[in-house]
Length: 483
Image (cartoon, rainbow, N blue to C red):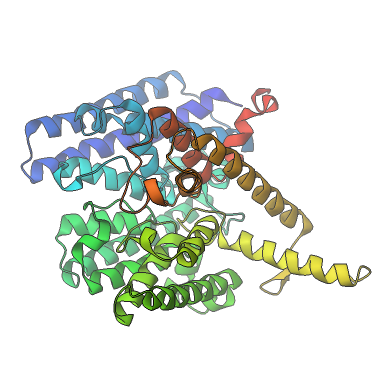
């Protein structure tokens, strides 16, 4: 690994984080909050900027990146963002313990949405905006943003893009990777602004809440400005707007780009999108009928809560309008299953990704057919195109690693949680970047009750899930550090 190049580029990411924190002080100033809050953000940003400049200066020089370097930049970049991003929480005393502050920050940057905070209405707006901004940066990836500006530094970004973009495959929209990153960020920013405007002018939110929730929606993060999440507004219009944009955020962003350039038919030609859409519809109908039969409320209310919850969980957003922890066991089991699935590849969602689940399902069907006819030659296809055996093997290995980490993590977390359900849902909620789990970490609870050591373990799981396991795990191989 080219350590000098890796830490030089990580310094640019840290610089972006520092500038963003200083800008959040402007939000605090605009809302006439105490000077201490503004200074906490300014000091935090200044520390990040100074450290970034010092590291950048001592690691300057010609940079040539390899694939191996890309993994290091992404992983250490996320760790650096978490360490410096936790300073506003610590300085403002919003979060007392440093581990809890890093848990909250990692949850933001990885778009997990798990929180240790309660009484959100009492938190200063400057801190709230920083909290929401960590989601927005993490959604498409701070490093993809840096890739867009790397040509100005004379550095190519393909190695970073490969390591950062979620999903088993990367659809390059243009030959130049920096142009691709700019296009994806352009689509991401446009959809964020549109959602914020709808929440303001149609849903009746103020601009601050509108942008904070738009950041959380498009990043599939789930941080809200209200303790009761979106349910605090009790608005069918707001629920509908956020549901639609959560659905869109869970779709491969290259499809949005094609739609905006006059090719909306690409949506329905994509098998992953079709599977994703049909699954959400079926899950919504199942949840609606089930909770309606258990007297949850009117059929309209049941459909509204079911559609919002199903979309929130499968896209790994984590917003809530209803306490699904009180729903029938069949509903809770379905929701936990959806936590493993996640959004589409190339979306801001977490989880294993729909395309992986879809291919594993097709592999299972093929194996059953081969069991009946061992001599048959059955080729797996996706969207009419054959799926290479190497990709199938890669997805099978990913699934095995994911489930192994989940099982081992669940055993470990039984030492830090009051019951088994809380233990295994705390792991899937962080490893899948969902946010809420069940029982002690349910939608109306938070992770504050977990001891610091347990929070540190879950923080690591969030990083693993956001960077899709391999990017982080490869750093534990001795061969990685050999030149």
